[in-house]
Amino acid sequence: MFDLDKWQEIFSTIEKNKLRTFLTGFSVAWGIFMLIILLGSGRGLENGVQNQFNSSASNSLWMWSDQTTLAYKGMKPGRRIQMENSDYDMIRNTIKGVEYISPRNYIWQNTTLSYKREFGNFDIRTVYPDYGIIEKVQVLEGRFVNNYDIEKFRKVVIISTVVKDALFKGEKPLDKFIIVSGIPFKVVGVFTDQDNSNGENNRVVYLPMSTAQRVFNGSNHVQLISLTTGTATVDQSKQMVDEIKSKMAAKYKFDPNDKRAVQIWNNVEEYAKVMKLFAGIRLFIWIIGIGTIIAGIVGVSNIMMIVVKERTKEIGIRKALGATPWGIISLVMQEAILITGFAGYIGLLLGIGLLELISKYMPPSDFFRNPDANFSIAISATILLIFAGALAGFVPARKAAAVKPVEALRDE
Image (cartoon, rainbow, N blue to C red; front, side, top):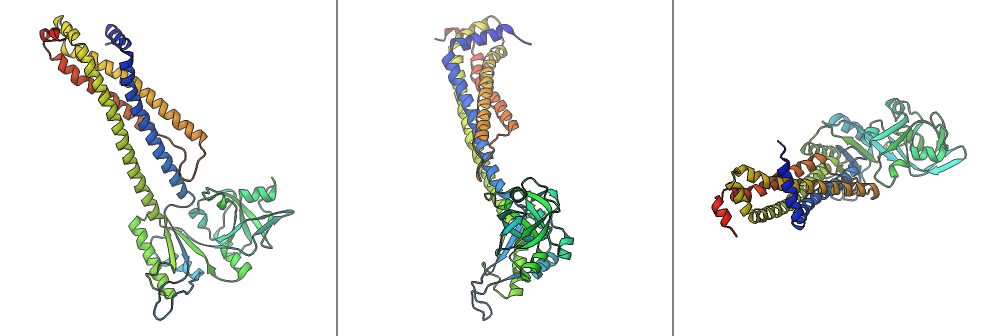
């Protein structure tokens, strides 16, 4: 039941002790403010680093070949390993756990693209259909490379929005022909890529690999093979890497322990490492934040002890007039709850407001972007702090309430 007299007394006490109330509230508000800022900053770091993985599937493996560095069965080091189309078939058909897989080549000789009188130099990648899923290519118009393109060696091209703007100047690109390295290709799709490499992945066109190999060089060479591992764990992905290296070593006759002959970047393992790192960062943030909150609680407890000490005589008079111990305790607790609740709310608003300003005006980077705090966690922390503040007031208040009225009246 709402007791107006009690609340008037609480506000009167606060009014008489403005500095004490301010210092108590400031310690609480600062604790919540620092917790929100720490949580938001940690989230901003996590968003920035996770964004590095968003440009391609986090469960992917990327394989390329290089030179041998170890002698093997009488063969000297320094031999160059050149992957072929058959390696794609071997991995797809013999390695358990492969979900999507695609080889990828670059065309280096002539990267000029043209349409009518417009020209531009762009990256030319040749791929299989699964590459669009692995690279997280978002098709906005038309389609990506498909199996029919591969089987029939079709001269089709998928262009990025950057290429579209540069060559077509507002004209619809689908079903138009552009010149790619001197050869006409039909535009069948327009895409965008969530790119983290200074726009590199959006200055690209994709061609069917089978077509490019036949038209441009006539070889079956492959520069890179990418694949996804489905729901494989880190250990299972490592097992797939070892199995792939073993098969490649047997085929190309190099030492399986040669780390340079065939190299595989395991995105599954790297992503797991990053997640463990941020789990540690979150734990560290909570330790620091809780430490700050505890400091605020200690401040509340000390202030409440002073309040009770100053009001010992008053408590004795109240008990002599028939006040119950709980009535005395609740009076002190309500004051503590009012101060901690209001100050905690102010700290919460200031923390979230500062994070919003940082998120709005600080340009996102590769390592820090969109700092925010989990609002439910912030509210839970505020409620916890209010409860702790009330508990901090309860302990000295209960001790004072237990004093006999005669002893309380003698207190100086």
